Length: 615
Image (cartoon, rainbow, N blue to C red; front, side):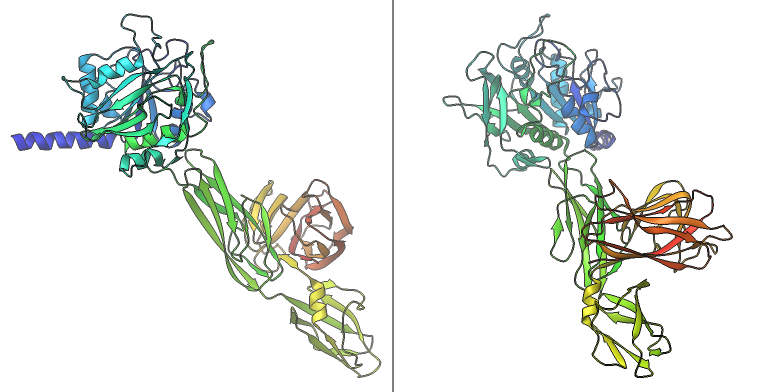
């Protein structure tokens, strides 16, 4: 029978614990709203559940400790208030807010003593694994004028005195109240203990503690003879004073934290005029202390980890040496903590931004670009992209003068820094008359270097050097199946398609798997800058299906899209076979481009293989 009772008790404790591992209960049965100080409640007139249920910010809840409760809500806890009509009990199944249903019970500045039955319920709650947080105040702060009203430290000293002893091992003593020259002070005298409790509170998930401020307070004395597990967390630094500002202990399976002043938890909000507020919660180490201590009491001392992803590039891109990639990260965290960001591009360079940021890779190779988001609790997460950088190369087509023939004929490829020899027949009387690089006619040849012979002309490294950096977007990755305005992440960066989509049907003229199809007054816009400027731009274009002719043009911006200038002349698309339109730009420095359909008709035109030849 005894074994059965033990097993039954253990099963009940495990069941109760499993039901409520993440609920925090703030007391409001002890007139915590009374007097001239802040209202020590989560949300006035919204109890037990603060309203709204899904706050966007701390300001959505209006009590003096709403910021503390809001931070716990963001960290995944359920926060509730035990209203003035509530009952303090433990394992009373008729009480929906019985302490057994919560992980932590917070008592913020109480002004009315607990009954003997309530004190026993609180002690039993702690002994069975509950977390108890006592938030005290200064002497002379009897703010509840009703029967039995008294200072918070008197309430707490009565609470810890149970069954003729003090199983908690600490008591509160008067300190410095309003009007006292020592009423406003700070302390950095944190314990150097390596105990789990001290480490969790002082070096916890929400940041290390360095300085806390107090505004009228009592002190704590602790006695290891009463409880060998009681220990100091923060000591006073006022000359001549002894005592602690913060202590902690364990009682049975539970944990207790006590602080001798409520001011550090005051977030400066209230619904009642005339309150004396300090707005201290968000300064110094105050916030970190309350969150570290609460999670320690709940037995969940790990801060949330950020969730990260890479928006751009949307996949692992392959570029040519000298080309650039636009990087854009995305990050969030459940408790809304501040995040810092870093891009490591894999070639020794980095940028402490979320994005967008353009990075140029100058040397062929394979690079791992890593995006990392780090919370102010030091928790971080990363995502990566693999950047394949090939040696820059150019496709060349040379033509001989009238009457001559040239070898090699057609398109050839030359690597950056390499050379290509073209031989003309007959051997005399003819020269190379034109040269096309990556589909762009280069015009006069005077800027290029040739061997000084008649029959053979060698394009040397001087040509490759003159081509500079490049960008080529094939539109073969990414998905956008509707004309409505939207962005799409492509290997070169993020593009906005307005009245345009990525088409892959048999009626979409394309090189590869898909191209951009536009209609009406559609636009195709780079949402990033090409850092090295543009000498020329080329783009392939053709009619969609059986549609009629369309007109369109190329615009560029040198101020990240604030203003635009047309490059060259308007183009008419009249064929269903892709043709290359070339534009001379000759603009150095960061630049971005936009293709605009200008006729406004329902006729559709496709664009593919958009290419920039930079400096």
